[in-house]
Structure formats: C-alpha cells, structure tokens
Image 1: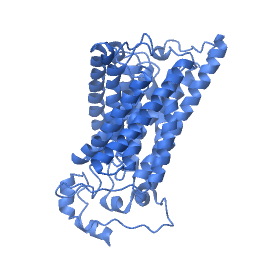
Image 2 (image 1 turned 90 degrees about the horizontal axis):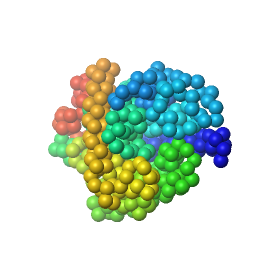
Image 3 (image 1 turned 180 degrees about the vertical axis):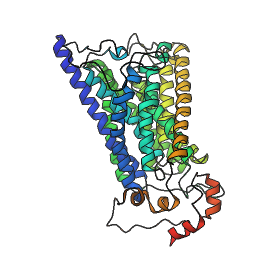
Image 4 (image 1 turned 120 degrees about the vertical axis):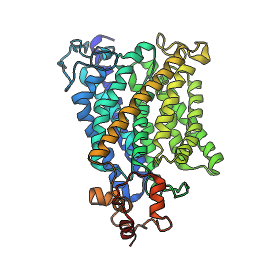
Length: 465
C-alpha cells in the first residue's frame, strides 16, 4: 500500500471509530436515565447532552495541549489555549512542528487525532453524571465538567499517553481503563461523597432503602449502544488500520463482555437470590471497562478470564458502596472505578508479548515477573491520588461558592420541574414517593447529606401535602 492510500485508510478507520465512541453518549444517557426515577429523567438526559459540548470546548481550548503538548513529565506546556499547527499536512500526515510529539506515532492528520481523543475525554466526564444524579445542581455539574476535561483529565492523561512519567516508568493502558474510566470513576466517587446521598436513600438507623430506576428497557437499550460503541473505543485506539490487531481487539473486547454478563448474572443470583437485570447490565459494562486497558496485550482466553472476574466483582462492589452509604444511583463507581483499576492491574498479570510485540512484555502469569505489575500498581495509585485530591478541591470550591446541591423541595418533587421546567412524561399520572415513614431530622442527620440549613421540617411537610 502506498503512503497516501495508507493515510486515507487509517484516517477513515480513526474517524469511524471516533464516531462510534461519540455515539456512546446516547448509551450513557439511556442507561443513566433508566436507572433514575422518572422525575429526574429530563435532567439526566440534559446532562448527558450538554456534557459533550462542555468537553469539546474545554478540551479544544486547554485540555488537548495539557495532555499531548510537549512539556515536562507532569503536563504539556506547548499547544495550549486552542490547538496550534497547520493541519495541511502532506500524505504523511505529520505537520505538528514539534508541538505534539507524544502522539506523532500515528500518521493521521492532526484533526483526526484531536477528534478521536476528544470523544474519550467526553466519556470520562459522562461517567460522573450518573453518580451525582438526582440531587446535583445543573449549573454546578456544567462547571465541574469544564474543570474535569480542561484540567484534571488531561494532566493524568499526559502522564500515560502524553509521554509523561508513568509512560517512562513502563505503565501501559491501551484504551483507557485508567486514563478514562478510573479518572471518571474517582471524580464521580468524590462527587457522590461530597454531595451526600439522595433524600430517603438511607434511614436514620443506617438501613438501605432501594430507589428503583424507572425504565429497565431504556437502560438495556443504552447498554447495547455502549456495547456497540466499545468496538470503536478499543479497536480504534490502534489509530491505524492494522488488520491483525483490529480483529484481535474486537475478539478480546467481546469475549470479556460476554463472560462478564454471565458471571454477573450468576453472582447476583447468589448474592440477591434473583438474577437482577441491573446487575447484569453493570456486569456487561464492567467487563468492557476491565478489558479496555489490556485488550491489545492479552490473548482471547485471558480476556475471557478477565471478563469473568470483572462480572463477579461488580456485584459486591455495588453492595459495598451502598453499605458505606455512598449513594451512586447507576453503579458507576463499581463499574468504572473498581473495574478500571482491575483492568489496569490485569495488564500486569495477563499480558503476553506475542500479542503486541515490543510493548508490555509478559505479565506475571506468563513468566514476566513483577516489573510490569509494579508499574501498573504505581500508575493506579498515582492517578487515583491525584484525581481524588484535585476533584475533591473542585467539588468543595463549587460547594462553597455556587453550591452543588438542589433544595430538599426540588429534590423530592424532581429535578425535571425544578431545574428544567418540564417533564419527561407529562401525560403520565405518577405516584409521589412516600417519605412519611422517615423522620426528617433523624434522616437528614443520618445521611450527612450536605443540604442547606433551610431544608426544614416545614419545607418537608409542604412537599408532602
């Protein structure tokens, strides 16, 4: 294949897979909306829609340069404040003038590289949406999305994909178990903790009250959209039309998802006495998250094992976060954080050099020793510490300035009316949730919900009438 034809084929591959990843915004919107109460459906849909617009502006203006610009081991220092360098490259596609050398390994034009990385950045921000659902102010979520994509995500990403210190240490994350999913998961966890649980989720004695989602049909549709999108997410990260590797990554991605669906279904059968569809959905996503880092470095049988483990651990992870009173309505922390960590570690355990020669080398289970595993664990800890600190600061600053939580009245009546002035199902007669069995003073104290002091018993009684 001549150089010009190769650039054309590679560019088509990168852009088509990027479009698949962009389409995952619909998947996240449907999953999160399905797992939310109907009174918050418009709010969650709107957040998933606006978050990609926020991501586009933040990543174009600042995030791209921080992540891929030449600089030091901790952040990019060139190409900030909107992408620079003419994108009028010849057939080689290389016209970066030394500004973005960390991503010069792929020969597609700058615009294709930027768009592919942009949809990944948008995915990290979307993860946060579900975990803080049902009680966050819409404007505060928008502000946090700008902070995450403009600052937090690209700095952590520079360490790994931008030629930073973790890359030099020998840390590997092919498609983003850590760069995308763990970063989004850590930020979501801190948001859920600082916001506090939804009213009524936990009783005065610590009891856990289920708040079911309003549409498992919508959640299942979203899951299948995400499943499809992952065949852009993982294989597209080759950023070149490599026939052997593209096919192999599709196989490992699908195998991990399939085995995770089965293991999560049977694990929920054991833990919950029923094959819970919500757990099966999260099991599928857990397997996809876990295989994201090792998909290009492990064999298909290893991918099957990784999926089995991911599907198993997501169920007790969801239960664990409930027990420690972290209210995550969609299970995003169990899916993206826990299995983002596991998938990253799996590289150090299951990698085999023959899959992608001259990259990771062999993992612990294939005679490679602990060197790769140590690098993976170091990366997990370092990125986790950075995102926890940075996102906690961001959440607290927003809390102290514009506020991050809606009023109790708005929360009980639903964010659709309070934040958006409309409803997802205006012609339906909906049943108002009963909170009469919960004493407001005890419940608010037990939840440590961070509501304003104006959330009083009078306000609570007005809502019930």
